[in-house]
Structure formats: structure tokens, C-alpha cells
Image 1 (cartoon, rainbow, N blue to C red):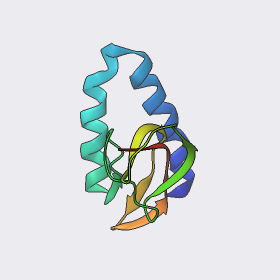
Image 2: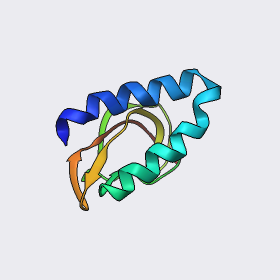
Image 3: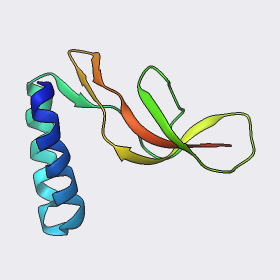
Image 4: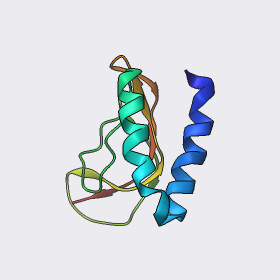
Length: 93
């Protein structure tokens, strides 16, 4: 499964760059779900979890709670286990 992740990264970049491909994203997510492979949640302001997220950048901000500011690379779970943590930028709120 790990060998497929670079291809999924390329597909994500293509979908982000080409709005006409947005319907492909839903089909891809459905297929991945059937294969028990799912993206780790990295929506903005999601609480940072070091078990799921790899913080590679920190935004200058004040606060006590660390949340995701930006997704830099998708992370994936396979059968509920992390096979690659999500690479994220973190900020405090």
C-alpha cells in the first residue's frame, strides 16, 4: 500500500490544480475507503495530534491549543493504523 502513496499525492495535486477533476476526488475517496485506506483529517483548525500529524512548520501565533494551519502532504490510515502521518503546518489558537 505504501508504494501507492506517491501516486495518490500526484492525483491530489492534479485535482487541486484542475477544478474540472473535483468529481474524481469523491470517486477516489470511495475507492480508497473500500480498500480500507483513508486520509487523515487535516482540515484547518483541526487539533494537532502527534500520532497522526507530523508538524514540519510552525506559524507565529499565540494561544495554548495547537491546531493545523495548512496541509503540506496528506497522511493515510490503513485498517485504522497510520501508514504515513500527515505533514502539516501548525499554529496556536
